[in-house]
Length: 470
Ligand code: SF4
Image (tube, helix red, strand yellow):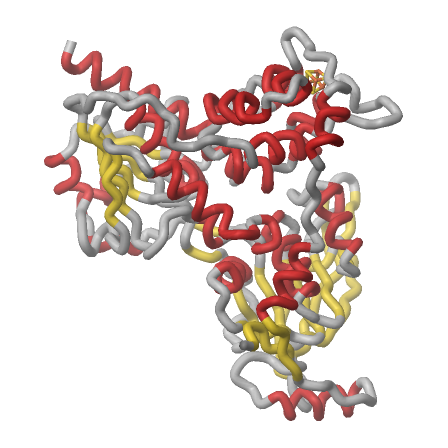
């Protein structure tokens, strides 16, 4: 059954319209066809990098097992990296996995999505050696394939009741950590599946074989965790009611609203926010794929959508970023992955206007900016390019729609960036109300940072509740 329709037109328009445009501008006609689900899976699987068990042992033996290991210092989740690599080197992958899970309950997804080249591997003492840094990310991925989830020792339920709103990486991690300490946890989420951005915002080729759902299922399989899905804050529950019923409430809402370009033409049907499109791909829905695609943004989401749309058959994919290549949030490793797929990355380009093109498709007008005396300023030059699809990947903001319906939420203080203001341990301005993950926004929006955040919040909740009853 066709899952991904490739056509040279933008959504809502007859493909023939675009064929006309191409005939006018490029002198050839596009062919309309569809990919099977299997063909798509094969294309995505080509992006996977794995170590065979035997290669993993060789790689693990390159590790010096450093005392005060800089790789562990660079890991936001503080995984004992030399210890788990040692376990792999001596043929104990299941033990390696349990060492990872001890510090990072999301060790599987972090092994797939962490920018290790900018974190642990960048700090490895072997980074300048001919063989490069120890390939910690691939070793972690292999170790997690040997994980024996569910082996956690049963705990007796304590008397603390905690409600967590949002079953994304931060919410799930807080839930699991508190449950392991005996707290009764209720995890609420508006979606029909847990996982948050791990489920909806990360490229399908990084999470093949339903990896995120398997991890979430393990993480939340605990007698002290109750999950209530399709439960929306402000509609089905209020902060006030949760505060009455629970000893503590954690806001792990993520950032659900898409940031807008705020330029004329943004409302055209071929202009799409990247995250909902990636989510549709993850759900296996049929999606349109343009022939000429422009992605606006410079982060991991921009890279994810560009690679995926290219793998799905887009002919030309441009990433346009408003500052310099070196300013992009996406690492050089990620950028090279995109280039390897034929994605063209352009710096110093700011979108100004999007117009319907004569004969179909869109014209995107962009100004060139350049650096002068350390500042990005307009160069006075501009360019117009054609596109069937334009994806915006310029970040998300806190969705405050729930705030309107829930007066108690109005009293949660926000910071200058419009995120929930918290102290170093995730406490908000309201007693026993905490915030974790992207919605609290103290660190970059990486899964591993959500885990680190969740660890701090879980320990703060336990400390605060214990001191309250002492
Ligand atoms: Fe091993 Fe490199 Fe970490 Fe040292 S810094 S423990 S060599 S991975």
